[in-house]
Image 1: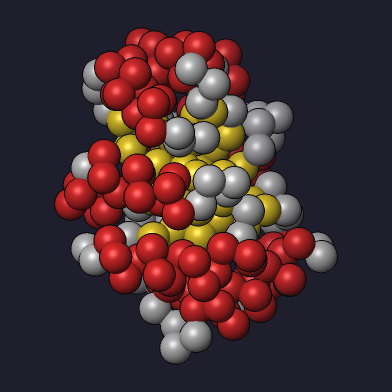
Image 2: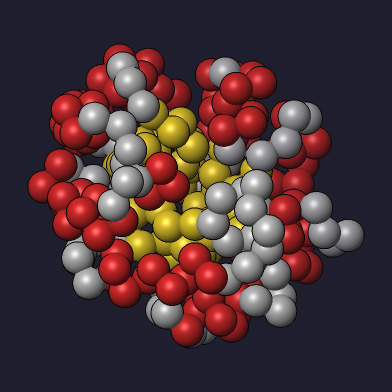
Length: 208
């Protein structure tokens, strides 16, 4: 089980500082969509420069022009990108094809999927390398979204990463479904001591 830490802030300099403090306690550093929207390529470039040996995911949330976006991002050194499950299959497929050519992996974000089971079933054939399953950020805090876990897990052999406003008091419930990865953002990045919080989750997850 891997830990992916998501960084979604509007202060790139401060974010890099936090990322440096937690980098020993994470498998994947996620350059969040807010950072990408605010700083564009610079956000990814600075993460790669600061962490040359770490796995970096750019949460691009592609819905169109996937081939072109991959071509633009590949020279920046990203390892993973995200594409939305709710977009056209042709977009997902073209994105995945180009990503494979450029040595980049694709995580299919199920957030806007019209049918979780169908998206999971088709993901591998479309070229995706993993799935991201999470609770919408504007919903009330709840683990009810996990009720749909079997619908996804039963239809794919791809790794599934789970995110859902995960905290110390909810991590055990998330881990019960045995995902391949867990994505945590504010619980770590906005903690009084991000490093201590990251170490707690990392040790828990890596020893599971």
